[in-house]
Image (tube, rainbow, N blue to C red; front, top):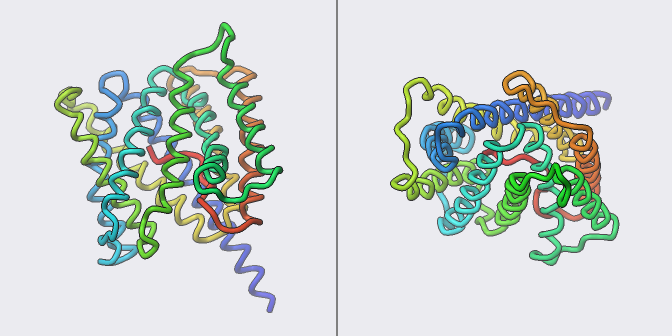
Amino acid sequence: MLKAPDNRRSQAFAGIGLMIIGVFSLCINDAFAKTLTAGYAPVQILFMRNLIALPIAVAVAWAMGGRDALRTYKPTAHLVRGAIWVGAATLFFTGLSYLGLAEATVLIFAAPVFITALSALVLKEPVGWRRWAAVLIGFAGVLIVVRPGSSTFQAASLFPVATAFLYAALMISARWVDPRESVWTLMLYLTGAGALLSALAMPFVWTPVRMEDLWLFAGIALFGTVGITMMTQAFRFAPAAVVAPFDYTALIWATLMGWIFWNEIPDFLTYAGAAVIIASGVYIVWRESRAEPGPDVSSGAPNC
């Protein structure tokens, strides 16, 4: 009888560890993408990332789900989700070319806020006044970071905000996927659809890839895939209310990387807005864990 709590505690620690590793990996992914935006169009970066990551995604799906993980029952749903993801990732990479890494990361944290709002407005799911209050507080945090109308306002801040909205739409669209398909199938077809759809833009934006940049493209594919895989596994080990708050450790890693590589130091209002957004997101996840199952609002950072 005494072993069960120890086992649950061990699984919780494992889930937290996997989440932190996954978030750190995605921050490396974003740092590499920010470096590449100096020489390549954002959609080309996404295309190269998906092209390299596709064999990795096939291998992971096969290892985790076997042959069934390679099968889809609704390919159209995956194409639509792929289009949403291409738009989200392209906007995020565009934002990274203008903004500091930490600032862009903070605004992505608004994704759970958008997910809750969309679940009520689009899926007509019940959302109580407490979660609506958290949504409004989260939007207030976004306004603190963006500061519209002030002398420090940057229009580029709207790119990661739009990314957070599209990522929320991506999570909501998971309802369109056949319930027989596993999370590994979703990961595989999202990568494949992303590669296919971003390839359509290559004749218009292609820049020859320099040999010295190949390791950066490979790094995006590797760390992006590792990141989303670790975060997915984290939610298999422990409840969302336990592991989801550690998604916000991304702000620590993004701040450190931005300072080390680009000498970026976010100002006080950016951190103040981040605190408001994070508090709103954590509360939403906690309330969601106590309510009926709905769209996953647990992860605030897209696998861009």
